[in-house]
Amino acid sequence: MASVKAPWRGFVGALQFLTRFPLPVPATENGLDQALGWLPLVGLLMGLLLGLVDLGLSWLGATPLLASTVIVVLLLVISGALHADGLMDTCDAVFGHGAPACQ
Image 1 (tube, one colour):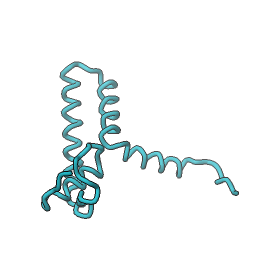
Image 2: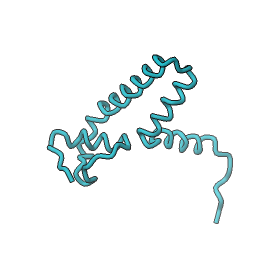
Image 3: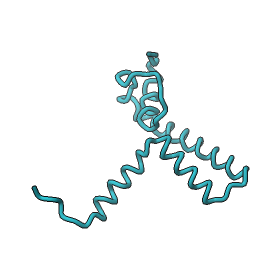
């Protein structure tokens, strides 16, 4: 397994936390404790990637519905549905209309 130099440990930790990209770095060395400052940069890189895909799809003449669908699916794949899971948990808590089962 590759080892990460100290300045990049936080970046690798943020990349592993926010994305599903496979990196040859063990979880114990990913620098998640140093990742807080790198999270906005990783989010920006994800947004740039999705923006480039959107530009490419519009250049190819894709309809807005198709382009939006591809972008959302790509975001779900890249992030491992991290934000979608949080949204569904919130919707479940706010809109769930039933008493919890008592056992």
